[in-house]
Image (tube, rainbow, N blue to C red; front, side):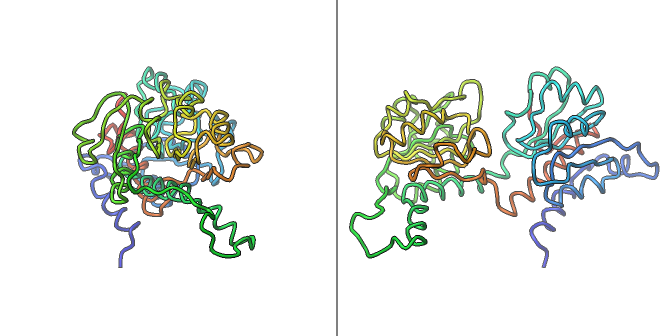
Length: 354
């Protein structure tokens, strides 16, 4: 029986270049274009690049981020680069790449690591991976919310440390979703997917905020558009699912945390820099809010001496929102397809409109 990866490969390569297969893969061998891959990625996408016949693929073959000097060396003279969120593609990198760089394909839905204005100025195309990680990230966010609200990491440690003596009426009590108000900051694809999954838990009301109301989308969850201050004041659970922009940088700070309920649970699966972490630590350590669950931090990884790691009421995960085998395989193939389409001047499956 075919595996998911096999089926995904067949599906995604079948329509790779419908109008250019003969031209690109014809009898005449094309001049190879240099492609730099900044990390070890699922093999399915990497094999697409190698088997395309148009790429001289060079890779930083490691699970760890490419050092800056190796990134500059690898991208020099490249026609395309496949990168991750951890690689800052800034002016220096673009200058080093030179005029040959045609396309940047990022293994992510976010693109705050890219110097968009510089990229736009140089006419470089950008591919990214929206949609394919929506379900996985939404599932992880719900899992993180439940683990944080019901104090599951604390409970596990209690068992492991022989602190579980008997059933106690007040032991490890947390907060439930039934009859609650959930506030979603950023009701995009992922925000809506999170709300859909939470609705069957008996949530009484959904609030959301963002740049503008989205009545067509919000109707599905009967969501109410409100100012961010009202969302902070009224929500039992606050979930961040917004992009990192100059407007959202440090959005959640001491002023907003001060408006939240003392019983509120705060969840961030968007970007770490949307939160002022010093202010979050103060809010958690003083009982200003009840608990927080973070799948993203600033920086990543969080230093082991960071004060947030000392708190029992703060659950921190290592940015695993999209970490299912199926999702990462699909991301790998889509990232490769975007890159190959950009190199050959074709329409990308998922191109960021600059």
